[in-house]
Image 1 (cartoon, helix red, strand yellow):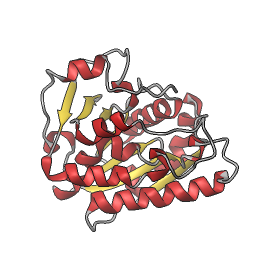
Image 2 (cartoon, one colour):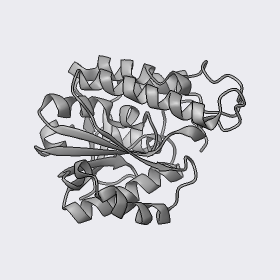
Image 3 (cartoon, rainbow, N blue to C red):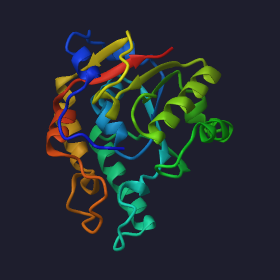
Image 4 (cartoon, rainbow, N blue to C red):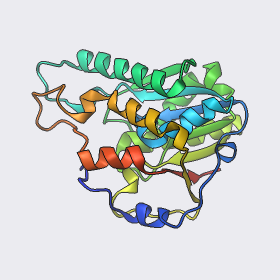
Length: 243
């Protein structure tokens, strides 16, 4: 995936005139399941809404598709196991910030970062559905199928399968798909809550390995451009109502 350097794109242009949606519309009372392809997608894509859902009394769980080990694949100082440990610790720190003392269970699918396929989604459904915090979700949020990353697409397909099985409401949130040329669905909504903008920014900062300066021996590895960090920290979150 080519990382843009500026927040521009068809979805962002459409979002300028999009309606805002309440947390009550986004998440029914009960269990909310967030399907994240990598540690940080839950914060970048829907960190404010996650915090608002918890504050509104929802139970929140996260299904983590991969451990994020593929962000710096050519690092020699940081092996895959070490990268997994770093990103797991970053996830825990980010969730502590967003949850404000509440517990968010995390189910790890441990699929290969950057290599997942539609078939992986179909294969994983049955074993993942055995977890009670997945099976009893009545609302699911997932990355968007038009995000330009295979793991984001796999998360979207898996979420659709889970939602059909559990008859859950399904919303997708745009992460990388908000940039560049993309098809823009009619059902585009924005979420923003000023009570949680500071927490989202702090949670994003917990992902130091993705912001540069931690894993310093892989020039091909991912680093969040400063302009995009500021965009994700300040722009309303973008949701599409899928079912």
